[in-house]
Image (cartoon, rainbow, N blue to C red):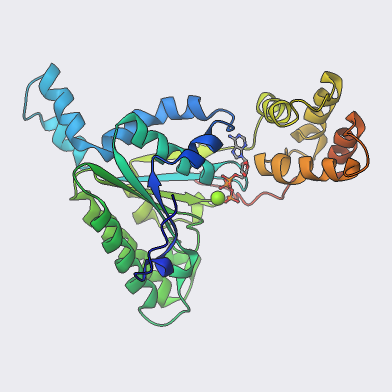
Length: 308
Ligand SMILES: Nc1ncnc2c1ncn2[C@@H]1O[C@H](COP(=O)(O)OP(=O)(O)OP(=O)(O)O)[C@@H](O)[C@H]1O
Ligand SMILES: [Mg+2]
C-alpha cells in the first residue's frame, strides 16, 4: 500500500510503503541471488532493527547485562549499499526491508527519501528538510513497528567535503544527516537507515565510519546473467544455445572488460529484443542474440573505491 498522506510528507518522501508489502514480495521473488545475500545479512540487519532480540538471546544463553550486548547496541543503525549502476542496490534495499519485517513479524514502514530533499539550494533548506524527514521517521517507529529510511542515490547528499568543494549548504546537510543518524541510534533499534550509493569513495568519511555494514554490489557474473535471461525468457521457446550465446555476448570478455548490469539485461536488452519481433511474429533466438551483439553495457560509475 502506498500512502499519499497530504501532511507535508509527500514533499519529503518519494514513497511511504506499509510493510510487509505484497508487491515488493512479488518482485523479490524475481531477484537472482536475493536469498543468498539476505541469509548473509538478514540477521545482522535484524539485530540493528531489534536490539531487544539481541538482549533476549544473550539473557537466554549467557545471562543478563552483558557488556557485549551494550557494545553491539551501540552501533549506528546505518547500512551502506554500494556498487555500480543497475546492480540491484535499490531493489535489494526494498526487498530486504520487507523480508526483515516478515522475518521478525513486525509491521513496518519503508520511507524513501525524496531527491527533492536536496532542495533548491537555499541556505539551510536541505538541513531543514533532513530534520523534518527524520522527525517523520521517528514518529513512524514504535515498539512493535519498524521504520526503514531509504536514502537512495546518496552521492550528492552525503558526499565528503573534498567532493563538494565549496558548497557550504551541502556540507551543512551532510553534518545534519550524521547528527540525525547519531540521534536515531538512541531509539534502540526501531529505525534502520539504508543508504545507497554508486560512489563509496565520495561518501563523507564521518558517515562511512558510522556504517554497521557495508555491502558491495557487482555486475552479474555468467551464472547470474544466465539465471536472469532464463527466468525472463521462460515460455518463449528460446534455445539453450541462444541463451548461452547471449550470456557470452553480455559478459565482460565481449565488452572491453565491463559486463552488462542487471538493468541492462532487464530494462534494455530484453525489451529491445521483443521490439524486433512485436507485433507481427514470435520472438526468435536471433532477436536475443543480435540485440546482445549490437548493444553495449552502461558505462561504469564506480571510480577507484578506497574500500573494496
Ligand atoms: N538480483 C537481481 N536479479 C534480477 N534482476 C535484478 C537484480 N538486481 C537488480 N535487478 C534488475 O535491475 C534493475 C535495476 O536495479 P536497481 O535499480 O536496484 O539498481 P541500482 O543498483 O539501485 O542502480 P542505480 O545505482 O542506478 O540506482 C531492476 O529493475 C531489476 O529488475
Ligand atoms: Mg538505485
